[in-house]
Length: 240
Image (cartoon, rainbow, N blue to C red; front, side, top):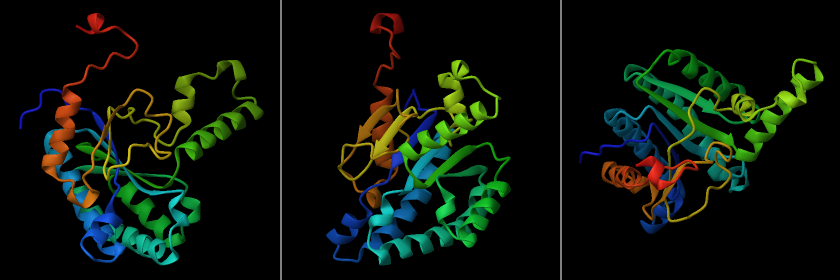
């Protein structure tokens, strides 16, 4: 499928792993395992299509409320993914960024994250950002704290705060805002993901569960994006 207008940055809420497993009479962890395969495939597909930035919501700050056994499995899955996938990402020219509150994780995960980001730092083909223990409100609050600290130290005046300065204080500093947001699994909400960054993002919702989200489903989302007119406050006539 040839698509003439591609988003520079795609952000995805990967929803539906548990329901996928339940539909097949399997435990929820089977859905999470299959979900990792979908991540691997979508990263490859985006690289092939020339997408520059891909941001995935892997574990929200609210997900700690899930059953302890599932959370423990997700942490082990995160560790195994960091251990087994980073070399492949590096070989394929993918830069890996991790955003979120990492203070809640142990030294093992923090060390793996630091190694992955350092190893892939200079890669240019695709920037893959993975949000773990992340929340959009947390992100905004962290930016506010950073700016407040500069004001308290005398390095910044309140009157000098701009939208650009706020954006530069966010966890996604240096990454353009998403052009296309995709949520799988049939829910039609943002769920505290990239609240600041999604201000002008095109939204796409699909009933397809994340483990079934493949190249065909990605192209459907890209086709939907290509057919939209992004006006950013201007009129349609001005765009034309």
